[in-house]
Length: 113
Image (cartoon, rainbow, N blue to C red; front, top):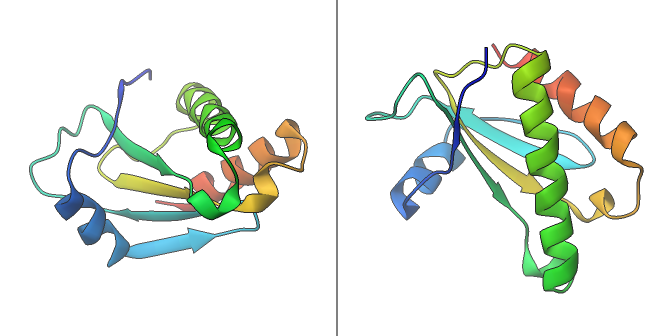
């Protein structure tokens, strides 16, 4: 099932998600939960990288990696579209191989049901 990926739109949605469930590994922290007034047919996900991690080039590289991983995840594993996701990256994403990061993130999304 290929679904369109949408970003969360306002601060209220981010604050609601942070209060809900989370799952974490050494690369990212995923906050997830059901939000009202969201389209169930589309995947609502946003990526966040703190300024502390590095300059704009490094932060954008991390975001590109995460978007690429999520596009593959939508195609390969079943992700619950009832949930909205907030993915916060950690600094270890810069130093490790893409394949290792991808496998770890796939395992976390399989845990979320």
